[in-house]
Image (tube, rainbow, N blue to C red; front, side, top):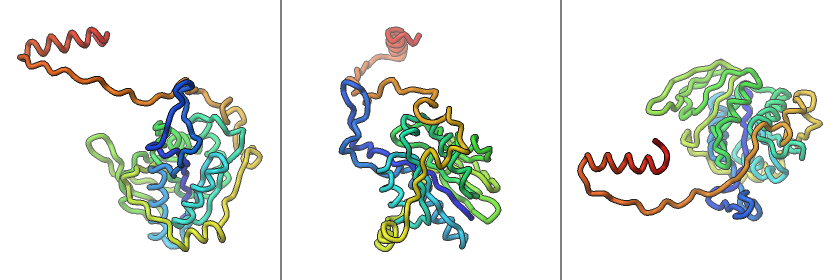
Length: 264
């Protein structure tokens, strides 16, 4: 089986700071990590590879040159190949332009199963994976919290669904999106680290590499139908007020507060 895992290098959100004037992320000096949901996807792919001998795992990412580090980490975990989509023309992409570009790259690759993380911790949209599936016309299963079984013909998963779950199966080719709770990703091995930097290489693709499979109006900032106006941190909540009253008075207080906030 040929498995492609789409990953994103993201800022470590425990370290993120915002420019108080511009309201934008300050990325300089901020450590970067593989997005947690994506890393669970890498581990899932490696486990499937172990269950089905002869399988291969390829990592695909879109980002700046420094995303090479994330791809090397995936290779050190056990992935076989890695490809980085990087071009200034791709910068500023929203989820639509990002998924269009990644789908264009996937059209040039061989795959049976595509694995994406549910969402990136720096965006939290959960849109890119499903959009990739739509661009490629593939069946998709989102919010995968457990891989129940996998064969050469189909995959069966447990899909998280509010207060319950679904058991869903799909034949290949298909796409799934994984939750970080799916598994505990393995550490890089010492031998894997040496191989990732000495024996294996990261293939670099730019706009020229995918121009025959992409619509030019769907890339980068110009191909993005959405715009981020402002980013801001969560505001601290004020101290609450406790009212020791009976039920009727409590109702009156609640209605009054809702009216003050123009909810009613």
